Each structure stands twice: as structure tokens, then as C-alpha cells.
Image (cartoon, one colour):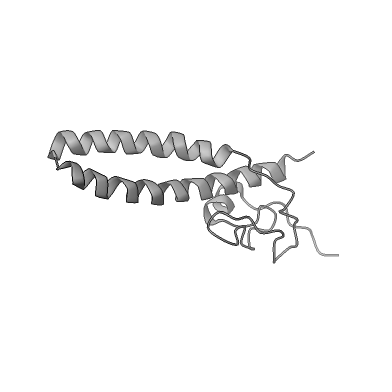
Length: 116
């Protein structure tokens, strides 16, 4: 009888967007859309919900970093206002999606480990 493998390492699986049980199958089918089931191990991912946690993480982490960075750039280089309007939305959008993917993967991994 083969030995059953325990849950995947939480942080690496979350950062790579992998299944919390096997660590091999992709967790996402789109940018932030969770798959209904893991294609590698068959874990039902539809029942796992990250709630509003990823959005809150994105707002707090990315918001704080963006405000600090914008203030530092403005104080140090004093670029025209249109440069701020061009640079910050692009950086904030990319970073927010990245943080929300990581947070969603982490919260789903925690939900899998601590489910009743």
C-alpha cells in the first residue's frame, strides 16, 4: 500500500498558485479564478472560499506601498503630475493582482489545512 503524502508546503504552494493538497496541480484557471477541482489529485476546490481576504490584503499592502513610493518619488525627483498619472496606475494594478493571487492561494491553503 503506497504511503499517502501529506499536504503540500503552504507558502511555496501559495506563491506558485498550486493545489494545497498535492502542490502539483494549478490552483487557478484564470487570473484570480479558482479551479473547480485540482487536475492532479482531484481535490474539490469549489468548496473553498477565500472571502474578502485577498482584496483586503491588496488594499492594505499595495495601498501602503504605493503611497509611500509616490511620496518618495515626488519628494526626490519632483516629476510632472502626468508622470505620476502614467506610472502609478500600471504599477498598482500589477502589484495588486500579484498580491491578491498570493493571498488567495494562502487563504485557500489555510482553509484546506484547518477545515473541520
